[in-house]
Image 1 (tube, helix red, strand yellow):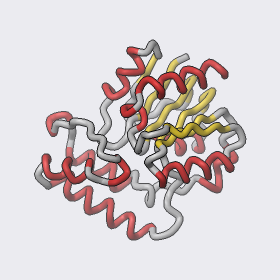
Image 2: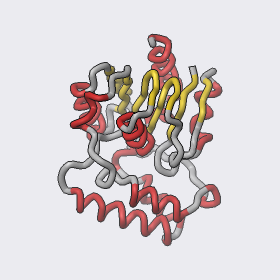
Image 3: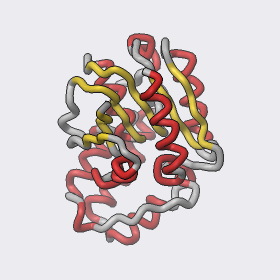
Length: 208
């Protein structure tokens, strides 16, 4: 069973190599060109938001895994858009080391960092993602989750309280969902606990 894996903001296709090493067949498409069908759709953070949009837009998958993703912004949308615009401007024009230092210092990451080199990114593309794929720009999904009638495994880290709450909310709205809270992890569950994550993923896909 192939895994179509969507990385998060500042993600790279190689981020999912640990799943390949664990024996999974992993496809890592460009986030602007998500396949319309497949076996398992896996999305982390920004990739999770885009996975939900794809499923609600008619993409046909046998099951889905959503990691550290929210359901969208219903209130204070202008405030979140302004926040993302500030980040977009920094990623487009700021000194790379300082921007990455401050990005990784955000509380949701719980002190977990992932090395990122400027040479691997188009800074204008990063700014575009922050502007166009902000949770306050993409349509909120809570009111439509009941339309996703495939098995869904929702994952969040226990130290990432906001997204634990989002996962619990999603569990109530999705027709066929399970929730795994990764004890001790923050936002970057797959890379904080790669073995446990791979085990949960394997158990889930083998049940389908």
